[in-house]
Image (cartoon, rainbow, N blue to C red; front, side, top):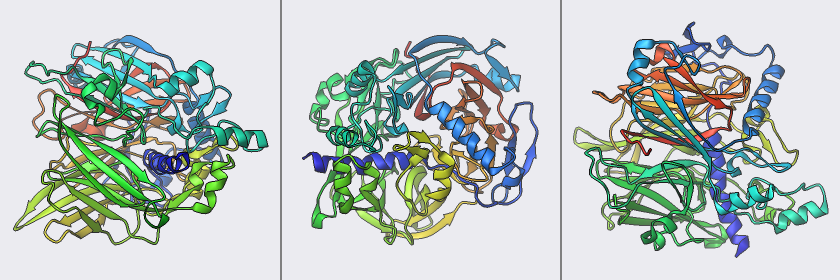
Length: 597
């Protein structure tokens, strides 16, 4: 039924907006700041104790000025129009690249591989604005040839909905967080009520599978670039041109049974188990009204080999909950059980076009959050639901892995959590007034997300320890591999005296000592998810480079910032122009040695 379908979409899509926007806040001081001025235009801050003293950060003179600046920066970035591009950029040309450390940048020029990044197209469709995470998808590929050339391609992801809306130049489906017409008039409410809540735009992630083998041998199936949004069907793109080939099940016919067209919704995030050469996706279904009219959540994890054959699958159902991210350890799928409840008294308003879907449910903050541990390899092994000591909303995972500790085994989980969360106006988007106000939203409705480290005893399946990491609020981590012990991770962060959006910092964190280094992009910049790139001759986990696409709203331009990971505290080694500004990037992936051209 359409009514129940909407509730299902609401739960999933709401987890998107929470996950993608949870990042940072500096509403309280976090210790002393150690800083140095660099040749690059931005300041670098090395945080050794508990974080950062926000009073020392460069910013506008008054809170009102800073709030207005943040609003202007995010609005400019979110509403920027996009175009399909296919360019060759010389990284050795001084007109394209500003180099701060020539020796290290020369090493970066030897990198061979492809960086895929998915994200948003313009948040304006026709004469109306749409929520960022219901915008059309805009995928980018950056192919490094190892000889100083960057082959840059960008293309709008043409799902059926996107193609129709672009053709008619208007919003056709309101989704959960947006509207097709103003709710101030009866006719506007009727239009919203009659509009579909399905917005499948494949705009959040980009993963290549199967991954070409380094020894040159070929898989029986050519690689495809898989893009997806939460509560959407996976789509396949041509890795060379980024042209949309169709639904994944249409491009790989054997997957029709796994992903029946029109009836197979997934979470955006997927995982790669390098040691077993497995690609893992999560199908998700919301059963409403469910048990006692409280709703139920059903998740199914499907592992594929390099021929897209199903190696294993495991399904689990539990109470109504919301989640966007999940992660793997060597033996478990780890899922945050973020408790939520349905607000049945608000359903009619949404169904009749008088409100958005965020009014239909809320977090159940009187209930403690749990981690669901689902065994990957033995279908007879019981699923464990591990209770924590408080409520929180976990949106993204840092490294998670199992380790031996004397005569015990432990699971280590790094998780970005909100201590509380109120739905509505996410990312500062106000669907009624048709404008963005990120600082007002970040100050009035949510606290900053913080990084917590959990240790779970795998004999008792109880939390042994939970520690709040003394670092500024962070989110959207990136790290070197899955399901293995790791010491380092990179995050998005921020240091705004008020509010915490849009993102403007990159953070490197030592997960053992908790020493962190923060690079600040400046008031008029928006940073995207960091990406770790291993050095061709890497001998250690953290031996490589870090890149982030930075959106320069002041100059309406995009650029690629590059760091040497081992000397991150010295600041970027170079910045490379990518051309005109485009809207915010969300999640990406890097494939060493892979060149689709």
